[in-house]
Image (cartoon, rainbow, N blue to C red; front, side, top):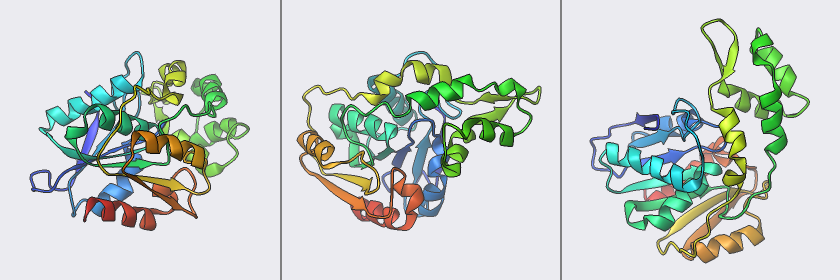
Length: 257
């Protein structure tokens, strides 16, 4: 079963909010948000398969990842819950909503659309796989090795959260990087099976990102006809990190908090 972390009082009568991270992320990506909001409602942050501390398994696609999340829900006796996912996690959330709408009270999708995404991470994944981790003695050396591929220090720091020390003192990837790379084409895709989600949903995008461009939003509206779109001008692909206060305001308003 997937690794998860519960924030707040899970025994209260408020509907729990399940949060899902993006590609090469982990449940820690939602830690600040969950810590600040846990008094309003219980929050369950999940490491998706082959990420964070969840098991390393073969195969990755959105039907398998949806089933993983439902397994956690069953384990925690969550017959109905709110669901929010960012990027890859947003695709998992949308797929779950389309196939199991009765399980959700509210749906929030963060900076992603139900379309084929461009393979922007292909070169990055190959560069990470090529890093000779057993030769590094510090995270700084790993950072320097990744710098030619990832120019922004903030992005490198985010990716290098996947590094962990071995018992021998060297580094290895905590995520199952080779399996993620192998299945990357499945993760850029989205299973369009002609389904629609007829309840309200909220899509939050960053205006400096193109993941929710007008063309992609038009596709999302076909599958989620009652969805609302909010674009945050100051944000890019990580609105929950780059503009946490305004992002949280929109989320809490949608959840009725």
